Length: 348
Ligand SMILES: [Fe+2]
Image (cartoon, rainbow, N blue to C red; front, side):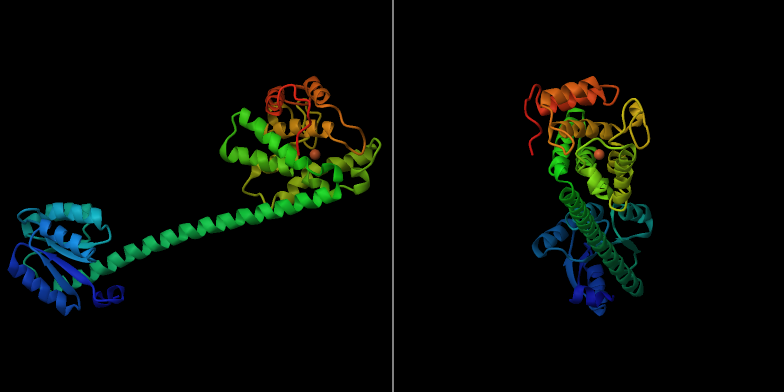
């Protein structure tokens, strides 16, 4: 891009120097570059011009001036107009100050006496630099917005996909209708009491919602069998935990905790659970939470193979199995979340 076509219109250049002769020479050079010049005789005057006329894309400023010197002007101007490309004019003895100006955000400096060709070259270079900085910032912002949008849309697709699976499972197994939502809700309440917040809490919520998703692969005659299961049938039903993890892995590669909940929600503290016979702390806490709420809801709702227990009986059973099947701390949190002594099953 040439300086004359900057932003599709004639760009302006602010010339700040207390020496009228220097301003005159620079104005001539600038005009031959296709830019229009705006003059100021001090830093204070230049700030007043900017306040009156708004941002001017490029500026050439002397360093030593009465009223307000070039360094102070540079600092103030960039505070208000950070995109302004400022070139400092400096005497041979002022190189240290010029370097200081570069640190403050000036794009370049020109040594006096002013050479016409040098001013032209530096002007073009400074405008190109400014364009690059602005473009980079634009792309950066655009990229961040795009990434946020993609992230939102990915999450939405994932949630829709997951909802579809939950509905598919509930259509197949009437007894689990509402079960996933209740387990999810009360697992979250218990998790909050155990100190969960933010993403880890969201993982519990999703894990509760999806813990039984692998039952999509369980035969319906076994799922709805009114009597006790044979060893073979029980082996088949146990597959729902690792199968659920496998089904969800492509959706939830970024949320391994959710996958662990799905896989491990039937593990028991004494190692007698499935599919990995994990013991105690080997079982992720999130899976121990879902296990307790899952068991309570299963006991207190009507199933094909038995009548529901009362909440008090279910809690008694949980406590009886504390440390053997279930984590006692989690049971306490769940009972508190459910309402100590509550006579109601989990509300749908
Ligand atoms: Fe399950």
